[in-house]
Image (cartoon, rainbow, N blue to C red; front, side):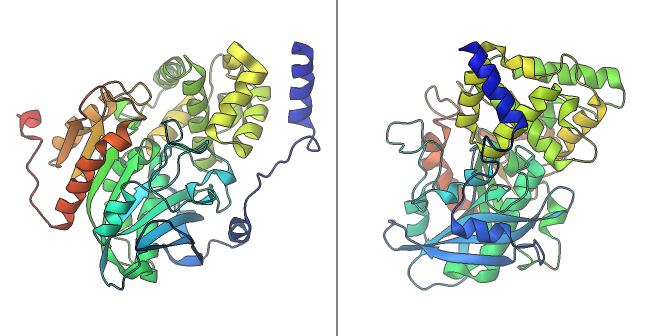
Length: 431
């Protein structure tokens, strides 16, 4: 059996005839992938009305112009759901989803019936192998909001997905707001609140501080007004790094700590290698996969992550390597100064957010350590920001966070749209 696995692995890596190198996507996404990302930020280049079972609602798939942390133009796809009744200047709720994977067919809008309330695959009632849908959708439609959920670049619009590169992911959310505003889909105006979970939570923290990008002129819809940011169990690697290291010894130590922290089990390992893969995608001229993976490991993981969602990727790694999955990594990474600086640049900038931020977390979250949110709050409170952290009732895990937090964030978002004052949650922190 072990011999067969080795032979199979060899053919997987070195023979293009054995596997399909491009994952299958529907005609909408095939056509989008042929479009050059030329135009204004947020410009819609393709749209298609689709079915939604939500009463009093209508829905579309869209593709729009975005750009990454290096200002390289990209295409992103998204799902939009809006009230069926006529309206104008409607408020926008922008959703940033959690981890689905890194392949072209991993965008949530590609599900067969995507315009539904958030469907969490791992909970009873989940009916898919991935998360899809939009949070609190019925409540938001009844409130008269237009809801847009980006797939992020690389998950349906061509190019390589910059997984967990919060700056890029956040810009995809910003441009999704510009997209529905410019097209006036469902009567969308310019006022928005953004909400994200896990990977998307990190995007929230990043975009909250991306003031210059939000205020950039010449987009498809200028002067969008973001009233607040909701981060559900957000990821923020940069807050743990401190000052950017300039010497190899310090960078080696940081990379070793990351290796040790995120390779203890297969689930963490899969997310970690996706983050390395996504970061290299964002910095192809500075980083190589072989800096952190052995040569065979780089080939294998590139093949897997280019074609499979996160859970299928984990299964594939386990099937072929079992408990020896760490053997794909180099014993000692090289080019570590560049890697640490890239990881930090792609994460949350240490700049004051432009609007209030609320973080919801569970005490039993073992996927994203809640201490990340705590450190972020302390750092930003000292910069004069309004950062609230809310511990959810009971013993909530990373995966129960979106559902349990829903009644809290629905009201918080309504309060932001109503311009209600925010009680300063930082008073006790900065005293």
